[in-house]
Amino acid sequence: MNKSGTGKSEHLYLQIAETFEHQIMDEVLKIGDKLPSVRLLSKEHGSSVSTILQAYYHLEGKGLVESRPQSGYYVRFNPSKFPRKIEKSNPVQVAKTKNVEAIIGEVYDDFSMPGITRFSLSVPAPNLLPLARLNKAMIQALRDLPANGTSYEQINGNEQLRRQVARWSMNWGGHLKPAEIITTSGCMNAIAYCLMAITKPGDTIAVESPVYFGVLRFAQSIGLKILELPTDPDTGVDPSDIKKAIRNHSVKAVFLVTNFSNPLGYCMPDEQKKETVTLLAKHGIPLIEDDLYGDVYFGKTRPRSCKSYDEEGNVLWCSSISKTLAPGYRVGWVAPGRYFEKIKQLKLYHSITSATAQQQALASFLSTGRYEHHLRKLRQTLHANSLQFTRAIGEYFPESVKLSTPQGGFILWLELDKKIDTYHLYQEAMQHKISIAPGTMFTLQDRYQNCMRLSYGMQWTNETDKALKKLGNLVKGMV
Image 1 (cartoon, rainbow, N blue to C red):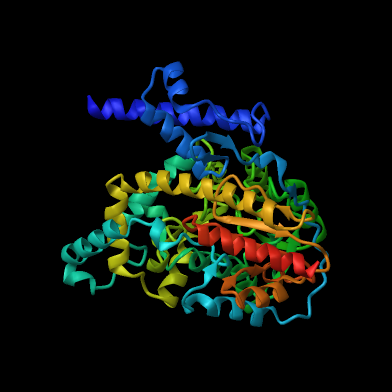
Image 2: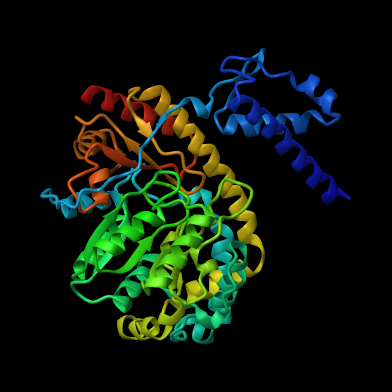
C-alpha cells in the first residue's frame, strides 16, 4: 500500500512540474510571473502540500523558478530565450600548426590539482555516484572470485558482466548475446582495438567534427588519415555528407558518437541512424559507434543505437560505465559484429585480459536493479544542471555567445566571439582555479579556436555559479 501510494505521489509531482515547465517554455508563464501558491495548488489538485512542494523544488532545481521569502515562487528563466544555437560545422581540410598535444597535456595535467573547478572533464563528479554500494560490490567480488580476484579472467571478459551488458542492450533496441561482447579497459580502449582491427597505416577514416580528441590522436598515432565531416549540433552527421565523402575519398571506416556526442552533444535521429547503417553496409565500410553517453538521456526513453539496425555485423558498438558509474574502474566493452575474432586477438596480444575484480563488481551491481535507480537520479541531476548552466551563461556571458542544446550527456559546446582564443581563456581561467577544454583540442584542422567544451557533470552549488560568473567576466574582458 505504501509503495503504491509513494509511486502515485512521485508521478503526480512530476506531472505538475512538467505542466509548469511547458507553460514557461510556451511563455504562458513569463519571467517574473508568480506561480500559484502551494496551498491553492494543493486544493486544485486534491493533493498534499508536500507533493506541490516537490514539484516546485523540481522546477527550482532546474533553475526555472525561484523562491522569494514571504512571497512565493516566481518564474526565473526560460531556456527557449537563450542562447543562440551554434551552426552546422563545415571543416576545411587544412592542418593546423599549433601544438595541440601540448595543450591537451596541459589541460589534463590539472587532474590532480586540488581546488580546481573542473568544467574540462566529461565525467560525473564522485558525489553523484553510488560509491558506498560500489564499494560493497567490490568487497563481495573479492570474496566470491577464485583466488580473490588475482587470477586471469577469460579473454572475452567476465561472463556475468557480458550477460548484464547483453541484457541491458534491450533498452536501445539491441539483441546482443554475451558471446558477442568483449570487455575492454574503458571505451577508448574498445575504440582503439576497433581502429586497429579494420584499418592499416595510410587509410582514411571519416569522423564528425568537432570530435573527441582521444580518437583523433590515437588514429594519428597508428598512421591513419582523418577526414572531418560537417556536423549538425542537433542531429549530427547527415548521411548525404557521408555519401559525398565516400564518393570523393577512399574512406575505410566511419567513427560516430551517435547519442549525445562529445563535444557537440547532438543525438542522431533514429531514421538517420538507420540510413547511415544501410549506406555503409552497401559500401562495405564498417561503422565504429561510440555509445558512451546513451544512458544519460533527458527525454522519456533511451535513444536507439546504430547497432540496433545492423544486420550485416558491420557496426562495432562500443560503450562503458565510465560516464555513468565508475570512471576509475576502466571497464568498457565492444560488440564488434563480424570483426569479433580480430578484436579478440588484438586484446590477447595487447593486454591478455581485463581487470578481474572490477568486472565482477560491476556485474553484481548491474544485476540488482540499482543501476537503473542510480541512472534516474543522475539524469534528473544532469538535466537540471544543463538548464542551470544555460541560465548562468545567459546571465554572465556576452550576448554574442552561441551554445549547444543537448538533450542528454554531460557537455555544452560554446562558440564565442571570433577574436577570442579559448586557449588563452583557459590560461586566464586557471589563474582563478577554473579549468575548461579549449575547442582547438577537438580537431586536426585550423578551427574552433573561439570555442570551448564545458562539463556540467557536477553538483550544482553557489561555487559552481560563481565560477561560471567569473568565467563569463573573463570572456567579456577579452571581447
